[in-house]
Amino acid sequence: MKYIHMLPFLDEEDLDELVENIKSGEVKDIKMVVLYPFLSRKSLESLVDYFIKENYSKELSRALPFISREKVNEIYDSIENGTVTGINELSILPFLGKKKIKEMFHKSIKEAAKNKETFDDEDEE
Image 1 (cartoon, rainbow, N blue to C red):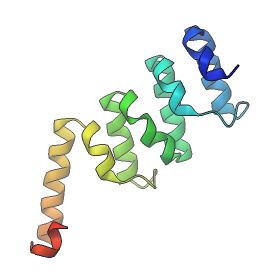
Image 2 (image 1 turned 90 degrees about the vertical axis):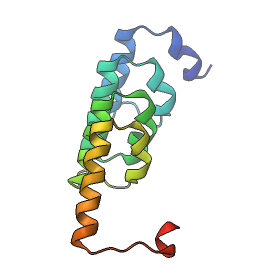
Image 3 (image 1 turned 90 degrees about the horizontal axis):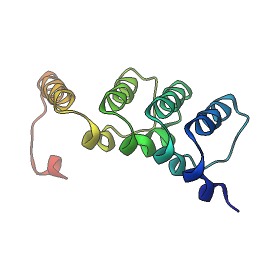
Image 4 (image 1 turned 180 degrees about the horizontal axis):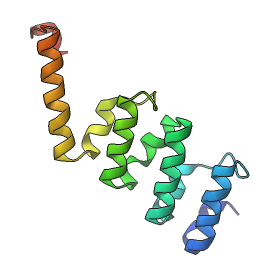
């Protein structure tokens, strides 16, 4: 039997232990995305913190639909400060809050003015 079929029947304590085993390297080669819906918020955020620390951009991208807006903001901030690489900022946009998107927008405007960007047909691609 595959572990995926048993996930819905594990209790929170078992899932928390699994997360700790993943973080310690004891458990490997598990499809994390199938695990996300079954984890408590605390365990999932702990796992996301681990992924940020280790720069597991693929797993961070896949976790976006399951995590809090605050965690998404942390991922974005980690991308901005260079801690996390390999994630396109645009892929995070739908998961960010209005406040963060507004900050990004104003930052982009300032950068465009600073670099004296102009808009023409080529920019619309």
